[in-house]
Length: 229
Image (spheres, rainbow, N blue to C red):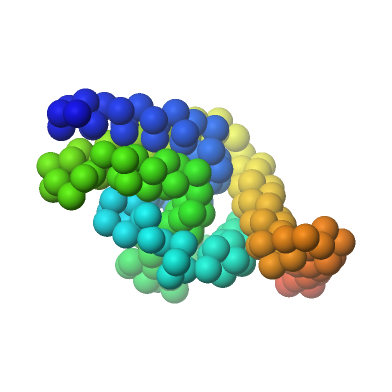
């Protein structure tokens, strides 16, 4: 296959795989919390690194990184974002100073990267790289560009949806919507991690998921609700 054939195949496959994926919803949530330039910088950096991993070492990724660890970290990250959205901030300028110049970008990068790592979209890139790279740099470049462009375009739709919501919904409603999105993905990733830890024992897996969810709810109840009264 030619460079352009591989590029188009990779782009269209990754774009379709990303449609309706969780990272689109994450961008809806991020649009209610961060500035556009911070979101674009963080997500584009994560997209570039994810695409590079898919091409360069994606085929061997499962041999070096335990997916149970990835899913557990993802669950913790999503729970933290949900908590921070529910907590809110009264002074936006004070928040910016406390976070630091690169804090939001780093947070967005890590959340997007962890959320997408090992996901079906990256696995799609891994499969395409294994099938069409053939040791050729040109083919690897086509797959890298196709993965990156497919992710960027699909997730741009999620960002646009988030911006529309931000401009048409009260801040308090948008914060609760963001909280709900992040919390759901926290529970889902905790469930996936528990399922990987107990692959043949559904009851302990459900128990771990329930414990993580209840712990998160308790932290929100103790640290957030008294502050909002």
